[in-house]
Length: 301
Image (cartoon, rainbow, N blue to C red; front, top):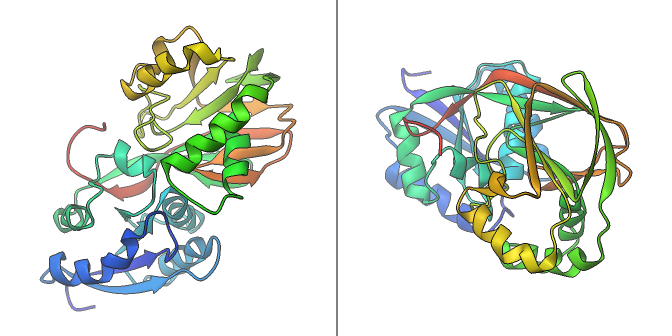
């Protein structure tokens, strides 16, 4: 290579709200070409970004991998880097609908401004989480959360409105489950509407369910939510948007390094916005500071 750093830009061509179609032009206009060269590779099938990122790390054909897409695309790239056991930095140009990890890291949703973050090149190490044989970076959930993700995956439209419509159609009929848990060696049972296992603080759209979650503290925020009466939902929505969800009497948050679930009867989970069939028994563990990520300098959101 010629002294410049080489970027591999992995683009999901069908992600989110269509902004990814502007990225090629934006890279030409706004990337610091004195510091960076780049190549673009488009994904061709589900989870293709994971194998592209893994191969790039193992071959050494770039210095930085840029994930262009939503949380699912970002998670695929991160999973590929982790699978290669590499220190390769990852950057994000958020082009999804929710963009939960980017929002938590204060990465701008503007393509131009996200590229400017790459130009500065500030890098920090963040945690990842292993759930059975899957790696994720932001947030996962079981129960109603997983049901909504599964139903949403079958819809023809994307975005907050479509997601909200799924929630409103399913919520009146959903029955909470009694979950058997082991959290850092302590056995417990909880009846819950859903349980989230958070590395970052939100699902996306600034819906913050784990306000104190920190990406580099070596801890998972286990957010246990019991059944919320429909009449209380406007209050809960306000607390979520105000980053005070943990103040609700319906919410219990436990910080942990290792969690086991013995009876996830629905068997699906919501893994960074994607419905994944995981089985009834789930083993979740934190991996402290395993991923290098380029982000704005300063504290997490």
